[in-house]
Image (cartoon, rainbow, N blue to C red):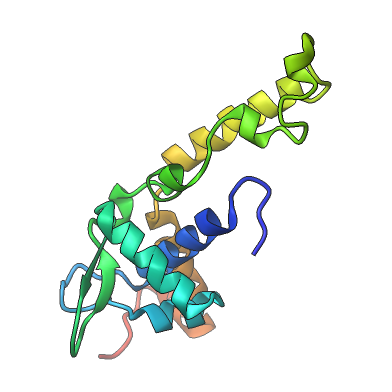
Length: 162
């Protein structure tokens, strides 16, 4: 999994938390996923996911329970967790870290040709991550799960049978 702005760890943490957002329910007894399930859903190595979940739990973003019905859940509603909450602590968020020249050109007294663009990219990416919550992924997942029959019912105002 490669990303222009995120490390492998940051991108995987985001993938794991989006899986938990997609499974989220208000009922605390539902919506938990085992590390293995998250790994399968997001095509990630299970040991890597398990390690990430421990880190996310230590930061208060997920909770885990052992045993039957156990697994990991988001510690707060998806609408209360920004993408920056998930990846910010795992990333080196600075323009210098994003620079392909690693300060060699800018540190020599001038600015590299990409300096201003990298700064703008950094500011823009941070704003997007801060304002976007995991709830956006939950809503998107639900929209993708709707069938054409569900769409017809929604248009006519009919409800599906229990």
